[in-house]
Image (cartoon, rainbow, N blue to C red; front, side, top):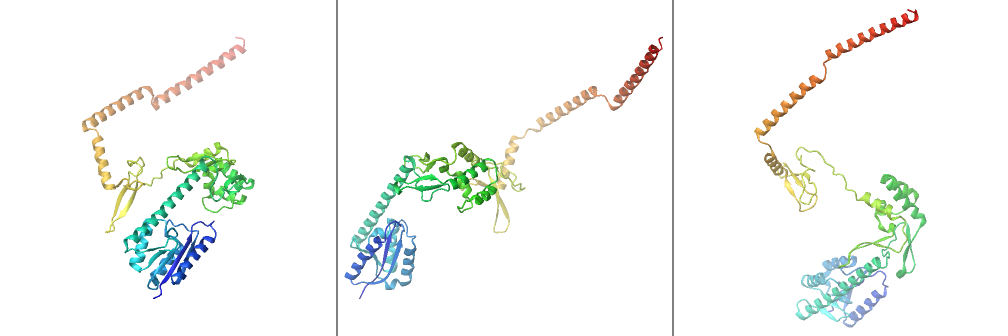
Length: 400
């Protein structure tokens, strides 16, 4: 009986040419022709990594197998690393394809037909998949090491899209950023306006009018926090090497002092908003063991009744019943309260002090009646002195 097969072709890097796919197609065609196998269908993933099975055409392949597995005997691949570079997931997939659907995987270039029920074949399948995963790990290490070195030692910008305000020039290995003055003016305006406390929504409107064509609701915030504009390159930690900001070889658009002032404004602690609730009076007063104030929330039970809780904003931190917390708080207050005798003595002493103070005030400050009498006497004396001065003046003028 003629055997039927489907095949899967893949290359991981979009920069690779179609020759990779064509070579895989030629190799599998020779195998199909030599073994007189009827090819049912072909699935191709271009520019997709083999780290996971989350690939468009591989998903279609799985759907096809689910529907038409009775008409398929083999799944052909060029090499096992074309199928997957994750040994654990790949072995599970190999087992599922054979045990559930009766389909065996054949690695054409390696000349291996993987049979889960044959110990030697299963061992070879596992070994090939482990080697593929090890190769993937080595590549990842080399790439991350190279990126870290370029950022920290060479100061190069190695990301795909150049930041707004810059453009790339040069060959791939010597590529660097240069300032685009038309866009740089907009970047400088954004920083200056933000330092002058202009609201962000007004900055966004004006920047769009000036020619800010990058999309996204947070584009201005990203510009304000991007270290590239200060001539720095951000690098993630790699093994024992630290991460952080490193000097770049490109020219900064914003001076370092202005950039740091903007960052300090962004990192100011936000004011805690407290909503008064009679059921949760200790909200924003109690603190979790991590030092953050707890918030509060209500949870509705199956009966429809609400139960209130104090909880920290971090998961797996404090989450306690409000009723229990209030009992503990009242108990703490009772332990802190003064004895009744001390309260009475304190109250008596306070009353005595207040009476003594009132007597001193009475002695020092005259009453309203006393004030009126004093004012009357003063007015009478002033009138009398005025009359005496007038009579003296007359006598002097008359020559007496």
